[in-house]
Length: 258
Image 1 (cartoon, rainbow, N blue to C red):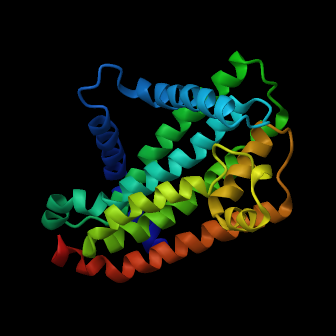
Image 2: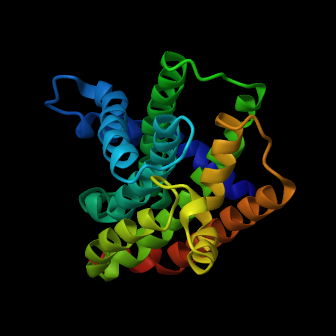
């Protein structure tokens, strides 16, 4: 374990450079630059709030905040896993030249997505203040579901990055999967409108648990229960170790498929 820690500390400056590179590339030639991390969720919230609050008449208090909080969580997972999936392929020229711990490429994409997450979270706070939604003391616990989600996404990202090197079709299939996953996560609708059989499926989605925990401390002035916390930790740990296992089993063959 100490060897892994020392190796990570040795290459940490490189990780910082990779994160900075990812952020610069994403907003290169953009007039507003990183401001888009604030504007994107805000504009999407406005559009979806108008559409869903009028078309479907969801009986949700502060629907715009409900919707934006869902976007913050789901968009992070989608961005983190999608960018992680192509992290090894996108760094093929560097991997072929020098030795670098390959997990750093996945970690850099996750860290870049965390920066976007923090910007989106700031947007959520600003919207809550602008709409005079009361901020409760429970907001200080918001780091718990966020940290668990980051760990969970890192595990999934490692898995996707490893299998995408060998099977490029995964990139196309995963885009369809993420679209389906969005509708199986209560981002734009309340759980109360679902039939019992569909409620069971939606609750089995790990993102639903993280989103519920997030909304509890942000909107509902309620601390998440022990059961939610237990399953959140369990899901994050299982995803992380599974991702690490698949990644380390396959990383030595990456060079053969790049």
